[in-house]
Length: 112
Length: 113
Image (cartoon, rainbow over all chains, first blue to last red; front, side):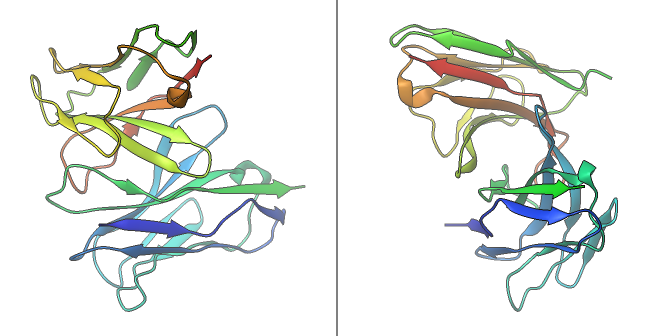
């Protein structure tokens, strides 16, 4: 079945460090890919998405590129802030599908 | 800007008790979902609905029932709670399937003792 694998956390960085959170997927066909973020005590919210190969999603300084050849959608940010501390979820969906498939989530902790 | 509202926020049940979690959305979304979140397992889909009066099973439906009598509400029921159902439950809604982003509530933390 379809699945998403994320790097295990927690990831602990100092403020202004470079962030990469790895995400790979297994799917039949060509899914759309998403990153959701969950701040403490809140529900998930969409961070960015990409709908086809080589698309780059970006938002709030975060970026991820849809790589079909490596079935990956790694999340990056050039300079993290303490306010970026959250849980990040990679997910996939199909245009005619009814649901998202989530990865296990990666905890990010940014220290000042 | 209410969005998706879940009630209650916290609940403690004893094994065998029943309860209903309520989800309400004010965005006129067709699709609604119930997920559970457990450490190290991400979010797993329990049940979902593609419109008023419809429901469908997700990945982990056993022990839960749902109803969508009104478009804006999606209820999740536990008929006989078990400790394995201790989790954080999230409701979500979306305008359409596939590419539309999901809008999540803030979750219900349920403990079954």
